[in-house]
Length: 416
Image (cartoon, rainbow, N blue to C red; front, side, top):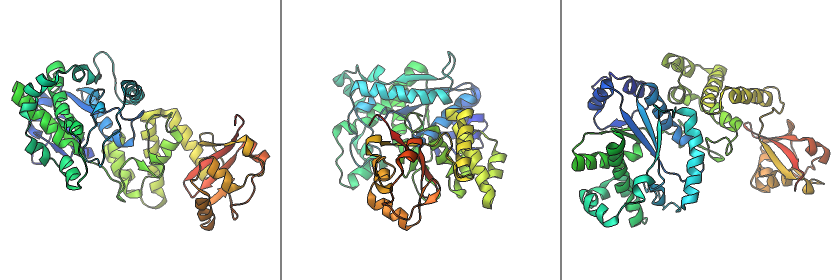
């Protein structure tokens, strides 16, 4: 990229590693310098919470607002009824209106932690506002005629699905037209000039830019972020237990903190730049630490990211719990609780208790952990998976450690 960014937003995007591609970098840079720009990112309401995979683009919206611009979070109340086929191997399950609204309500809690939705601040919109009332024949005539099926089939997101001979329904095929129409409507209604998203959305974004140029003869822009993988090749946001949710009701703050604390050494500096607001020099300094000192940088990363989402008190509490668990061998107040039915406590073995409480998946996994010396009860190694657990001890709670990083407080559930 030969053009050096002059606007604060594009300079931050470039320096901190957020930028994958831009449809017209120099043109967007000039627009940002000329005065506030309005931009949006779309989120389909397919789950009750956003997850860590969404956090990169949420941080982009946050930086966009902090540099004096106007962000829009567009909720896909309409497009969720269709489902984005981009790089998916199968069709998403279809949700009804009540489920979609419930998911939007859950996601809104997360956005409110990162963006200011005051009178002059960010705006949350729902594309059902203009999609639900569309007349099909009018839409085909006025909008559909601008789309070439040949070109749509050439997009990598669609091509990869067809190359694997996996079905792509006509319903899903309409998604890219609807997303392009979103950009056109946002430009008309709210003066939105920029769409951002992950690099897997490049084709959809370009469609919206092309449609707006053809229909209204207006210049707008697109900007994408890289699709992140960790240094060991895993998709960012996935853990052994599944998605790392951003809603505290779906993933306790301690578990969220622990996810970041377990960052691979090689990723610390990069993640500090992307997921925190620490100065670049500090990110580089912390990322360059070696040996045991890199653990201090991981704690800093976990504290900074958790503070943004859950608040400073939750971050401090999580760090205290982690120190008690890992350094002092204690339990800690934030340790996630696993419940065992009280009716099953008498004579229960370690293997039975762990499976029934959902800490491990099967008795076979317990045997493997014991064989590898990877299972501890109250910090004491378990040598026999059939060892009985004391009912009195369970009443007050025992700490179960699976490997080095997974710890639970096992307690009785008196209601069961």
